[in-house]
Length: 156
Image 1: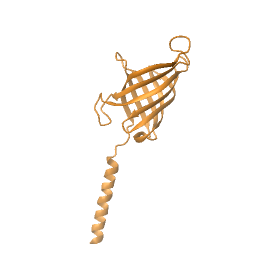
Image 2: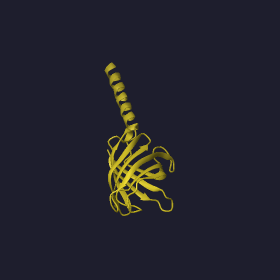
Image 3: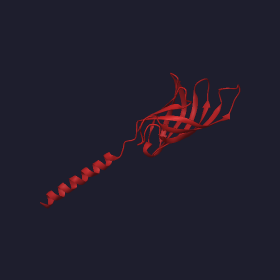
Image 4: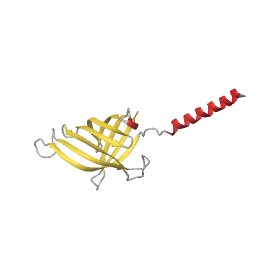
């Protein structure tokens, strides 16, 4: 009888433990944000005037939900990003951006490319909930707003 009570007790503790693990949300694989520019500073402006190879820009942006996520509704401010981009030629550029989000950060770093009007850059690392994340950031301009759509597609 004692063995049966012990077995039932251990079984329920193990089930509760599995429920606790299941209750922890898996990190998101797709994050959809709206990026609104807060600051834009030309650090290096190589000749000729306008976008040219070697131009380096630093920006800071506020990030809000494009859809309900992170336990917050669409439009809620959920983070920020800050980084530096350097033009290489007509389209490619190098990027180094730190993205701050609820429960962690993402690092976007490397050479970006343009595909069908969107700029795609590599996500190379994450911290907190995003630890081990890699993937891509796709940035497109939102017409008539000056804002950008940032879509992170992540692998862990």
